[in-house]
Image: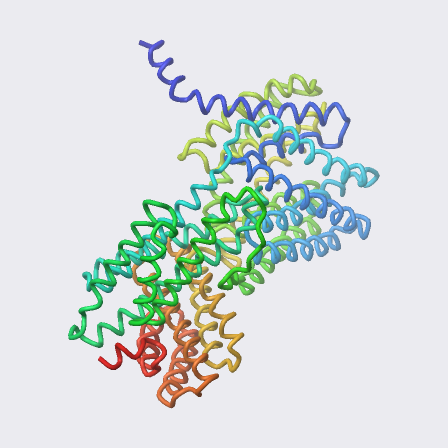
Length: 639
């Protein structure tokens, strides 16, 4: 019975055991190379080998690149701090300024560029604090830090690269095509006069899916220069998907106000749109029915010019992506048809920078006043945590899990060094003792319930045990060092929870305020270029709004409708401004814009009211836009 259960357990866990063995081999080989080369603090190499392990090949390569880049910059910065001053107070000030700058930059960048900036920040702290107690070897520490990072990356890549899956490019293309199909089907359902609850549910699903696709883009094209060249066209397609929702919402509201007296053209048009959606879904291209597609676009343009124009943009954007996706020969690079401006939250970036600086100043002040020998270790750990996790959605919650994982790692390190390998020990024995801890950690990392904290258990184990060094300080100092690094994690938890706290709800409020300001700027701007740039930025902010809302345990319907209302307001303001440049804005529209600006300006001061105000303003501006013959077409207005 026991043998059968053991066989069943091994069969179930075998893939994870193989993965753990591969990661453990990478870490130990990196340690062996660093020890063989006689580098300072050789345990940095296996820590890097574990950190850069990724589920896909592209992420593995690109994360390794940005880690090396950030490490090089941060190591030089740490050395410059040490060369500038040996005073704990001055080092604290320099480190807080350096960390604030890196955290601030990291919080306005995206993807692995952000990671590189944050790595530069914490590497400066690691080098500065490691060199404080060993000033004659500052240059050796800088070289060793860079060398260990390089060794860890090279070894981990060599061991795991060919076993790491390559992310399928077709998966992203398939998701884009499916959401385009759903977008067109939604318009067809709207024209058929579908149930309001079905329309709301479908467009909510579409918006959430678009937000998820956009949020995964950096990971999808990581490590692929080919995909990076196409990112402008993919983002242009995302904007076109959003624009069709805007135009459909405008057209649907207008048709609802027009009544059901003249609906004979709507069902045939919706049927043609269903056929276009079918061709996109089944054939994966718009080419099989070019003539039919042209007929649909012409008909939609004649009845609803704005809808027809937007539908044409979507089809062209999708076709461009499909044609270039697997092109084997280089083609002439074509500009994206619609702009895409990413959201940059400068306010939260400033808060993150200030939080990091204040946390470091607090720990540095304790170090300076008490002259505690392990103060640099605590400062080092706090610097890593307040920087690397500053972009996380729930850093206080995440760091709580990390604290418990780190506690396990520190306890394992104390057990190994003080009980199993007391005194001076051989690096070979240290590596052998480390195997069970690393294997268990990587297996725990692959289980959902134990994933949070598993990586940090391994990293803190390596950092405190310091394999590769024959001996460690005296027992009291060694134990104090273990508690110091845990104290650094605790300081970061307190900083994220009580000192300028951050969570998805706050990010959501910040995004709503930013969207309100964008729309207000569009309402008062005299330049059409400014309006277009603000609208392009609003697209991304609405997607980020939905992504953050999805992390809260709330009903998404109000946020989805508010986000769509913001998109519709942007479209209306742009159309009114375009008309105004040619013919002047009518008095009714001008009054609606002014009133909308006042309502939005007031709502910005009360973020809880912004969603309701967005829907109210969208209705007001839609009504004003209907006064423009260009918006919906003479055939409808004449009817």
